[in-house]
Image (cartoon, rainbow, N blue to C red; front, side, top):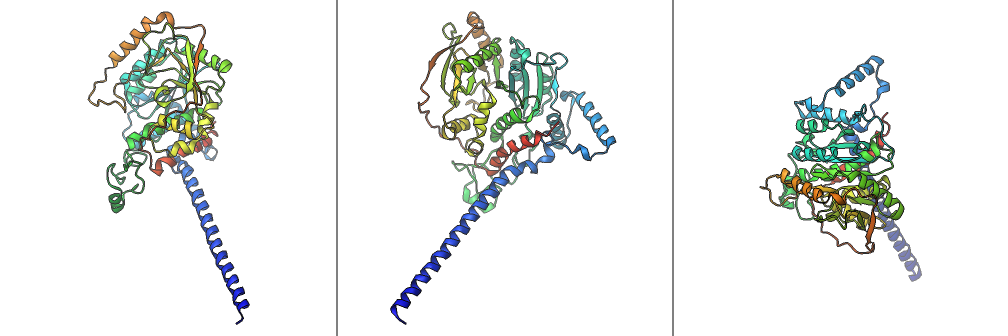
Length: 463
């Protein structure tokens, strides 16, 4: 065979080999794309997986019912509404789920006979509640004493069904009030995900041992080598779910264009907090349109309000300083929501540290907050998740007394007629990147977290 013919054969063979590897590469790429698409589908399919347990966000197929069945159902719903939650004594987890899902589905607003209408600019106040009635009682007491509170819609967002807590909520008579329940709370799923499944890996088991015993989440320890602990995941899940629910799912708020304020059960407020927040909203519109969040609370609070009672700072939002008494509109929520994947997959079980990460790594520019320098929201919790002394007594009265004394001494400097910006800090200032706390590496948490948006989209068909 002539050399030129051999050379041609070598070239053809080389081209065939190159074509083969190109096809393999493209095929692998297609497989990767399909795998990613399948993962995306998994992330939202969990809404369908739990749809029987989440009637609150999925419209019932009433058109398929016979007229008499529909009538019986409506009568049963009316009977349920007439029974206070504090009088309900569920005998099983299934019954408890049924009760809270009925509450979520009905979306009943209480006290309408006393407060039939709210002003369009009225503030929505959302309180995240677990099971600390001694704190919630103090928060409700402080809200009741607040001026202009009758303008508000108060939404109590529970992750625990408690007779005592329900009784406190039922005592509220100073504004419109609604209860919602985070439907995937640990109490409602004690022996299965999102609770602690018996086959879940123990927190501290080595990864190789976990793979050997084939526990459920063996392949997914967090960045510190620890496995998921259900109780520690609940607060972040609840915070993210309730924001979706309020801005997108509830008929009473899905078109609300004003402020939504977020409190927790171990906060209390000053008598002028509502009017002060209204002033901050006006100042934001006129002088700080770039402000994403209004912050009403500070951990490092001054003892004298004389020089700061009517002053605010404009500063880059920091989770460790500005996570108390936050208020923002749906415009800010839309920004945060656009980073859902970043929020839901970041390996930190704290919602506020996760939001800090989102602010610095996902948003086009970091979140900016307007902070009142004389705080109107106060933290009184001495027994929270992060409290260092686990044996400390919950000295609620002592904490409340300290705040009441502070406000009494500074009464002349409350109820301002206007507010002023004291300082605007350079937005380009770099916020120190915080090391994640872990506890959020399980893909089941990621998928559930990502599913909340779809739940509310389905729920918009509710009538």
